[in-house]
Amino acid sequence: MTPSIPRVGWYGLGSMGLGMSLNLQKYLQAKDLPPLRYSNRTMSKGDVLRDAGAVPEEWGALVQKSDVIFTMISTDDVLIDLLKEAATMEISLNGKVFVDTSTLHPDTSEWAAKHLSDQGAIFIAAPVFGASPVAAAGKLIFAVAGPAAAVATVRPLIINIMGRSIIDMGENVRKSSLLKISGNILVISFMEVIAEAQVFAEAAGIGTQQMEEFIGNMFGPVLQSYSHRITSGAYAPPLDTAPGFAAALACKDMNHALSIADRHNVRLHTLEMASRRLNMAREYAGECLDSSALYGVARVDVGLSFWSENSRQGNESFSSSFN
Image (cartoon, rainbow, N blue to C red; front, side, top):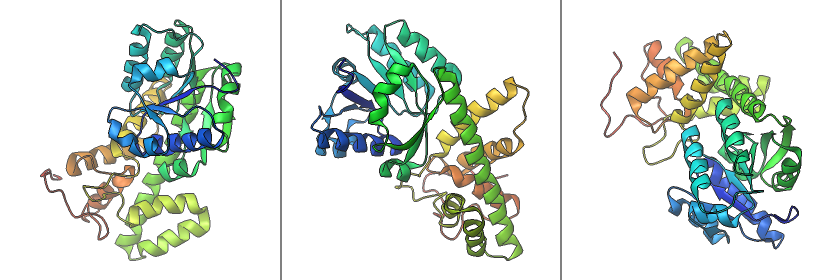
């Protein structure tokens, strides 16, 4: 591998991965560097990348032709399967750097580092903080852990391209995963508390818009944006519109946090409530829900409808109900 000009690959083109990889391709093209090679379970999701000059590849060819491989995947099992497949290919992984930007359980990050090390490759845990609009704007925060030399190689591919800053977590990849999960505890807990405040505002007659204005003035634009996902109805988008951050992924992240907390005899009461409500929302309204859909169940808990005046009003093919 040439450290100054690595050949770069990308796997995973969900709402986060597509924006991140597109920014990376634009950078490579602007610098007249080799184009990004990309792969995904559904390759058509990469059409915008292809139009920007990136090269579609099957996973095996991507690994073979890349020196640095980024992944942004939905679950730990997907990454495990990809890395196991890479190890069984008749290609050398020696010297290749795999950078995962997803939310992984620390045990998975530790396994990935050991598994790749046995193949002569390197694993960097680089989970990101920020929603899909932040990814598209190239303003994510990366929490990066891995061998220092490898981190130095990928840093120029991150700063001012996909992210605005890097938090250096040292060489222990577990620590990056733990920081990301800790951040998710805060994010989802904020959403739970804001949902309760907005239900209180509606039930007590304060007004949800007035509550949102107060949240913005008092706590800033980030928490105001969380409130807006609720008041705008984006918590339950139209069935043909992808949610901003899928409820299923948020539940996966909460499960990681709650399992680690249980291991250390820690109770996360707010997160436990958020998990209960979001899973109930999925049972009632299906999977086309944002992580803020816990608001719908908070509404039901005080006798309001799950659906607000700004959300969709039901499911065409889903008939569950609250008891």
